[in-house]
Length: 402
Image (tube, rainbow, N blue to C red):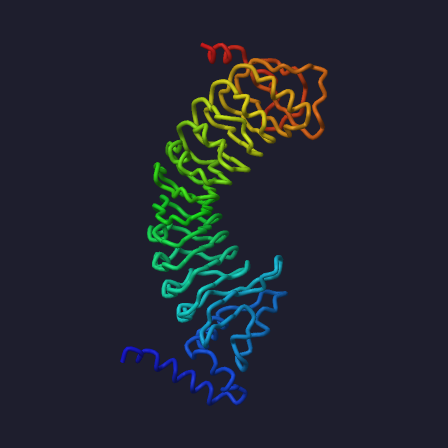
């Protein structure tokens, strides 16, 4: 009696076989009847966008395991990739049918960029074997189903570039095998869940409306890629950042993070460090020469002298802070030898730089010094948003020293 609920579907399948004179029973019987009917429902809810021929092979008089985007093991569908995966190819339009949840052996489900709208089916939470779920760059709306937190085998969840709203369900943070969570460019709100997975390496939540404070243990130390930019997150993250010593990419820009920036952070194997437009304060003191290619600390509340250890950075943005004192001579040497490509120091309280007024800045390099407590010794083009004032008013400089 446990499988009695399947009888209506089986009867429908058998009736379909009997009534369709073109149906090849021997070939199509290779696929489980429930999976066969689920694929039919999925197909009816979607269609090709103009220029797409993805569904041309979906002829249900032949073996569905040979359909484009479908692969099977034994008599069950294990992979369903909807749409032509080639970059730039037109996608699909329609809705995701709830019958997806009947593909009980499904391990991988993805949808190429297109115009699929409506919510994610709650029935996805039934797919206990699902390891890979990617539905990005479509028009998916509504909330992320909390039931996805029951998919204990899930390793990758990519729902980026959609119109999802509401909070990230707490159960998502408890998934033990989760390695990649990509929810960027949505309309998500509320706090981050506590992430318990020790295999989480990529977390991309940029361009949402997430809020709340991050504590020292909010994120696992296994992270290698972390992007939280363009949110409303806050908190003093110096202790948190010190723990994340596996990072090779970090972007916390355009948030409300506070506190100091730990000097040890600059020793991490990072190629790009984006901390601009926050509320970081205090001195910044790397423990050694910085080997990061791009460091952006602009638009914060940082102060004190500029460390000579920053002179090894190729693209350095320290503008719009409260740095003071003279620019170390090693910056000039590396700038004139074209080892520094971008050096933005405008809108600080710097008092001097040892550079000959006749020195020629390499064409491949950009230097901006305006609006400091000195007259710029060389005239170089600055970004338009730096304004037209060359020097900061003397009264402001006196008050800063005082």
